[in-house]
Image (cartoon, rainbow, N blue to C red; front, side):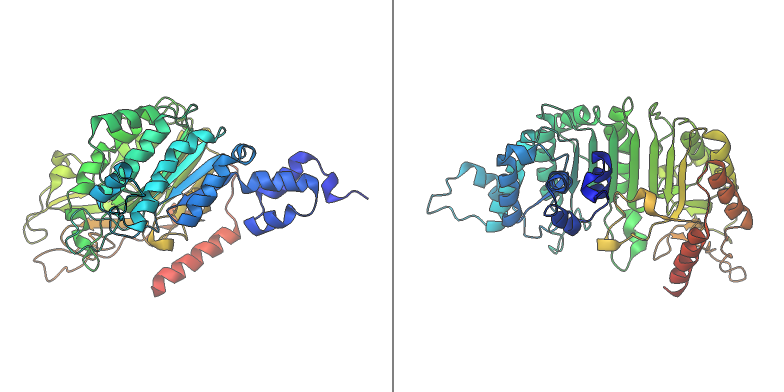
Length: 464
């Protein structure tokens, strides 16, 4: 009778690949073959945080060439760092002698400096393929009350050290992910030049973008200037350098984007793109659909909590996805001082367009991830796990000036007591039917389990 240890090496690797960390540690003790395979899987991804313990362990790993050779992915995680950041003290630590009795730096700053110094030692990981940089999801530009510890200065300091280290690698990384990237771009031309060089070698890019949030007054979130500067720059700074080689692109935002703030991707074409994932993206015009359809190479497409805006009413029409000429002015009794536009496409149009226009598509998910706001942030590296199906926010309107968000279910009409709120546009049977047809067409299918998950999600929303 054959034992597990006599199985082919490929199968043993697959067993280890699907085992959790505790199981891998146990497998290491069962057999010599499992020991090496489990060790390889355990060290495939390592995480460095700003804690003293993590810094020591990571340093030990780097000093052990045999173990460092097993690492393929590194996560540089600052999300738990919540001390006050002082740029002068941080930079002063570099120039002062730690043995100087007059030098008494903040221990948190010392650890942070040790943390960023280890970035340059990424070159000691010969098979490094993928790097993740993680920040805290809460971000602010003007923090008058000191509530936000990860300031713009803090994030910029970390990011510059990160970019500098990646540029020095002997072998460029192929996968880059930044979790909770604040919507403020670097302006230093040298940093941007280094970033372009790194981006040009990538095969996979994930950007989970964090936006400043006004707690209790969400309608003010889009009045900050940062998102209206960051998202229009997304193409030129982050995406243009990746065009030639990128195969995987994930763009998530903690607030809706696409329509307002404007994010126009139509001028970009990725000739090798196989996977596209969008989270919290709002569709308002056929050109957004056409942009997706222009990528005939797509094999995987994920749309997580993405909505179609069937009506929009906005004060500032100059900064939206639509051209100002595409708006109409309604009589004052309907919408005062706002510009209005409507969109007649529905999700069944989109699903049928994907079915007919993406010949290589093999995996598609439209729906809602259960991991939104776990750890108070957006889903990360979780594109293929969202619950398939139409959901509560599949259709929305944009009604400027109202909260808790201008993205809402019903249009609120000003100065019209008779009409009040328009009824929400529900998703239709045609939408779900077209979704199922698309899934059947690509050979993925739609199961009863998918429908049960969707109904459970709907029930959660209904009671929230």
